[in-house]
Image (cartoon, rainbow, N blue to C red; front, side, top):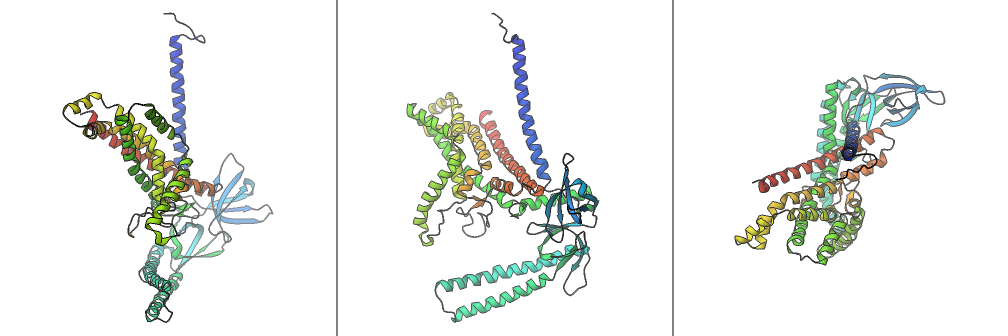
Length: 519
């Protein structure tokens, strides 16, 4: 055998070169993946970490001085320093950049606190005392007890609104629809009850408004914050490392259980997390049986003709169709055509207001099922091909029919391949954004698709999705480091959700493989 040198390299050197190149590109891939994970993790966890507050003194371009309480964000490679501060003109936070030469002093403000409000805003100020009705000013040590008292008043107000005022308001609306006269006894009785409950609500609101927290800013300017709007007060500049981690875990709990606030730049992501998991769950229920049945037909029943070959090629090509095309298809066919027909048949009394003829979680799940259907079909068909013909022949020899052989022999052996397709479908569906924005996902949904109102699962409702939340947050966090951190935190959560869903599917696949392939 002639040993030919290529580029001056013999066979051993060429093999070594190929191994080195493959190892190099594999290392580059791993470095890129690890770098992405580190970046997302670092920027995402910064959203929960409490930043110390400094009393910053500096000069403005016109020569005047300013003094504010601020978080300082600086980069040694840049000449500018970013301040996120609160003052009497911007009590809920403002951000600006100054030159290093403009900074005169920056001292840790140990008596300052970060006051978190229920609407997602935050105030950096120095708490002075608590104003309580019919009592002398209370020290800051009593903030926990005062917050509980205000929470009880708020609960009473909500109870009156939901248990009494809302039903009366609904009954009056029914009277309006039936053109009941104003002086009807039943209507007058409801109006009197409504006014009575409304007075009680107003009295409670007046009492609640008297609970206030008096704070001051760096220049001594006073500011009053209603206790009812406060979520928590943290003296972040004096926290120990252990206490900072306590704040971090508390922030993570709020992040996972609260709703987005301030244009999706603060608060939590629970509705988006819930909507993502629900949509993926519905999509999996829909796509799995259709994909498996289609693969069974192509593998076991379809004749080996040119038409079958064209169908297989078409299914494979469908996996490469841009996802936005599926979104347009879902909007045109599922929402407008199919949903409009359902409204005409079942919900004609509510027309022209659509019920199923508008984007919702069911149409989103159905659209994503169509999008991921080729992946499930191809993976399932590949798993069916790996079933030994001897097992099928043995089943037929024992008198089993074809359908019995498929159900009891072929499908159990091919189940790991089916789960592979489901895993790929889950991973793709959880991260898609473009088609979901057309068929049901929105930046903010006031209600969840599942609640305590019959029929409990509302498939016609729009929903929030982590991918859409990240997409929307990217446009509101171009210059705000804290908001950008929330976007990265949502990215990290989306990765964790996909990872957990995939791990569950992988464990199920491993269990099926161990059961049917190894004994």
